[in-house]
Length: 111
Image 1 (cartoon, rainbow, N blue to C red):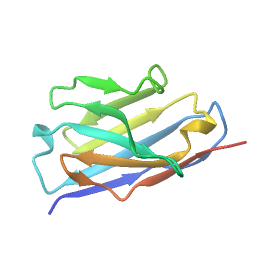
Image 2 (image 1 turned 90 degrees about the horizontal axis):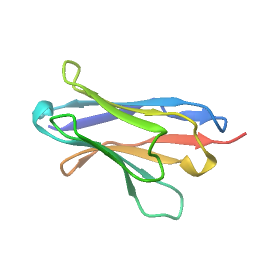
Image 3 (image 1 turned 120 degrees about the horizontal axis):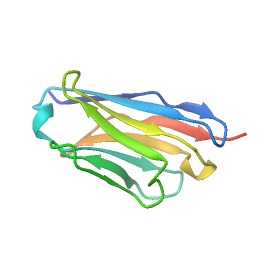
């Protein structure tokens, strides 16, 4: 069955960096767009970044210039490099492929 396993979250100070990973299995990874979403307490889940099967990318305005999404087809893994992190980036980050979601990984930006 489809599995999406996120990792790489944690606590980081403002201005710091983290790299999230999402290991995918159980489907044709090369043929699907992959995306990262996030959900902060009391807020709706929102799209952060998306990468198509042809590597075309799209970002939320709030993260443009700070976050980079990438994918490694040899490892069936999608990444989210997050730089210049802000307290408002604090959320649970989820990986998504079609209608399938990972379990999420917590990112906390705080001094």
